Image: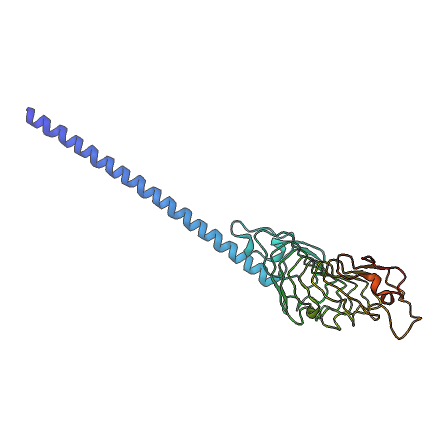
Length: 285
């Protein structure tokens, strides 16, 4: 009798252990199944998101009202989800993650503000389809190269700022520019073609301060404001601003010239600005 009782108790304990192990296995299996389901759902969400982005890009109809697909890296988003697009204007300022190239723009963009990013280069293709641009501002990037023809199709461009970059030379500029700013670059005289500004018949404001220029470039007569301070300009000629063969010539438009912060002593070149209506700002001793 005692032996049978011990055998029965042993059988019950063994059965309990088997059931417990089976239950643990079931819960473990269920936990892994739930993990697999969650992973599958996440993959489906990402796939759906990528599909939405692809459709938006293909349609070319993205604007600032387009909803942001859930999840993912913002650097993958179309321009008007990464930046702010208003009617005719695109604002891409201090974009996070870093913007390293010119963004693709809606075709009827008039104004582009892409200040304080990490844009390194402007290519000939960046503005190929956007001929409506009137103002571009790339202030505070790291642009060191601009391909020839990059601005060739921008026949309506009036204002261009490339200030606070790393340019050593200038490309051909659009003919209708009214204001051009290349302050705080690394421009030297050999990096600016002799006729770089000659055909800019509407240019009124030219800013080339804080560069490495050794001489004053040829300045169109339309220019009213000229900033050349803090360069390496050491001398002037009678034809820098005036006309040596015409002592009666008066330059009618230019009313602000800054050459301070250069090694040139203006008092040594009195005939260089006798045609001006106001004296340049600089050293005269």
